Amino acid sequence: MRVLLAVVFLASCACQSQAVSYTVTDQNSSLEFTIDDPTFNLNVPNDPVQLPRTVEWTVDGRRILVYPSAPLTLLDIGHIHPGAHVGANQVHAQGPLLGYGTGATTGAVTGAVAYSVNGGATDSGSSRISEKVDIHNKSGGAVPVQLTGMGFKPTQAALEVPDLNGLTVEGTTMIYFQGTPQASSLTGQPPYPPVTVRPVVNFTGFNPLLNQNFSLPDGAVLTMVTELKLSPPVLTVTIVWWVLVGLLVLGLTAGALVWRRRSR
Image (tube, rainbow, N blue to C red; front, top):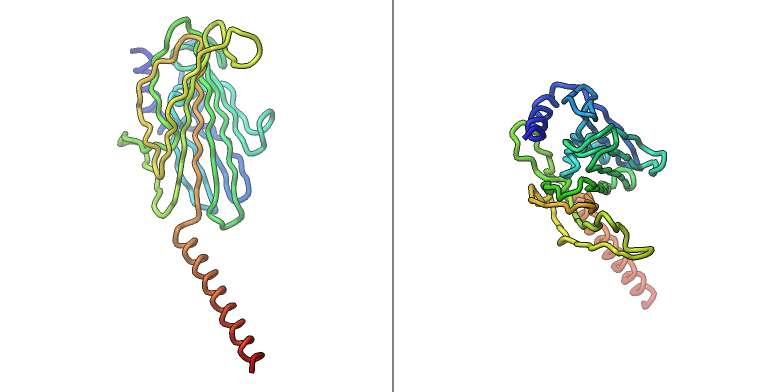
């Protein structure tokens, strides 16, 4: 209950505070990951609490608002940066799950995320972003969470609904979990851990994976990977196709005229 109240409190205050943001770019695209400013203190060992808020994906000047996945949204981010031990087009962040923290990056349940942006040529309208999340349960018991995929459509009235009008956004979310307190890897020496792969979610537009109840076993690591891909507008593709067809017809016509003249 304390965790739930804390989440409600932070959500109500988020729009009134400054925020910490990091931006990475690649060709025609940029990705800006935003978390809370370090102003929220809940009298917990990992104060101040900074939760993930938004991802802003900009392609050829068009801003596309994206909401991060859950339970990532309940990680208190104590470590965040672009580059360094990740790529120049990536942002890395980590911290404990809200209610399980013992320090800025430590706790009985910890997690991390890596965001990537891969752009296309200028004015191509093509781009791709991905989110890779790991949540490690070391609490000694199962931990209940709710699974929501990156790129969902918010149901809360206070949240801005992303504008996807005129955009072709396709996505995929893959989720699996594996491990016990005694074993975490499928490589190396036994004992080997159990592993469960959930059905892959493919979608166009908003991510349909929303608030699915899930229990993460003790010792297990939950991994969620979501990719969002922006394709050129259908109108642009159609115009290019017809231009190619027109050039082909002109080429064939010109070739036929040359052949006739030479035949005469």
